[in-house]
Length: 225
Image (cartoon, rainbow, N blue to C red; front, side, top):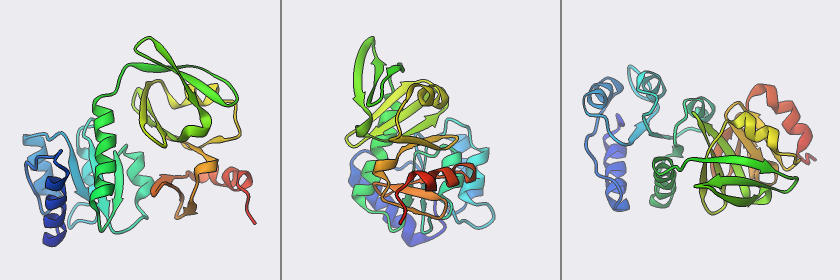
């Protein structure tokens, strides 16, 4: 959904180039999008934020909670509110094919999530249970951990791990200065931060929101000159 004809055409073409998406509809505003999504729920919604009448964020708030959405926008300032709504990803325009493919990998992993759980942890690693197999995951591999309903998503440099747990339970099992909670929905690796701006940290070009209550502690943790 995008009110700009050129942006909508560009996104449509990118979606087809992925070879993984079938475009079932296009909308110019949120009211039309809400009507179409309600009538024929898609597997995934690509949604612009700044729209006339109703914004993309306002639309997300009235869509079913299980709706998978990737937001597209020309501004970073909405990242914190967007991730509060559990969007799959947040793409800054102009969107390119590699970045869209990365977002689709997240969608795939969510759809294929297994019934796993975090079972134990030490100073430099933790174990996750995946189909009755305990897998060792080194904390240095983790980029961030994200809450999503009854699951958490652990993002490493190479893949996502979908784990049946709460973020609070994961936080309690981690005894490391390497990882820090910065939001009610996010734990990040301090070593992986590329930059901090506009109330968010950027890790591998992905903005992760930082709640006001965690900002002073974050500043104390990083090596600020």
